Length: 150
Image 1 (cartoon, one colour):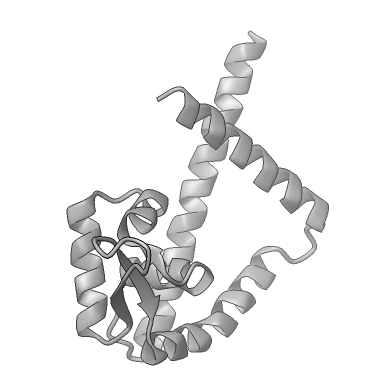
Image 2 (cartoon, helix red, strand yellow):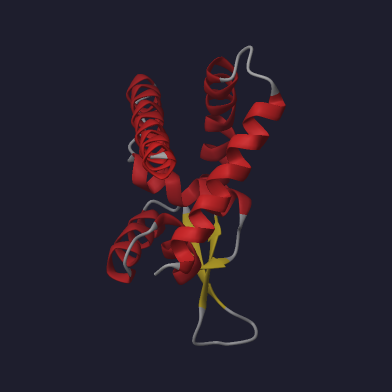
C-alpha cells in the first residue's frame, strides 16, 4: 500500500511539473507577443541553455532538451538564420561543432532575463529556499533513477 501511495505522489509531482512548464510557456509566450519578438519558446529554450553553457555541442543540447538530432539541427539552423547563434569548429575535434550565442542572441537573453526573474520571484513568493532546494534534490534523484532504469 505504501508503495502505491509513493507511486501516486511521484505521478502527481510529475503532473505538477508539467503544469508548471505549461504556465511558464504561457507567460513567456505573452511576453514575446507583447514585445513583438519573432521567436518561439523552443528556440528560447535552446538559447537559455546556451546562455548557461555557451559552446555546447549539438548533442549536449539535444540530450538536455530531449530532442532528436534532426529536430535539434532544425532549431539550431533556425537560430543561425536569425543571427542568434553561431556554429564553430571544436578546437580539439574539427568534426565536432560548438554552438555559441552571438551578440544578437546574448542581447535577447539579457532582455528576457528580467522577465524570467520576475516570473520566478512571483512563483516562489513566501516559499522557503530550503523547500525549493529539497524539491530540486528530489527531482534530480528521481531523474537519476529513471535514467539508470533505461
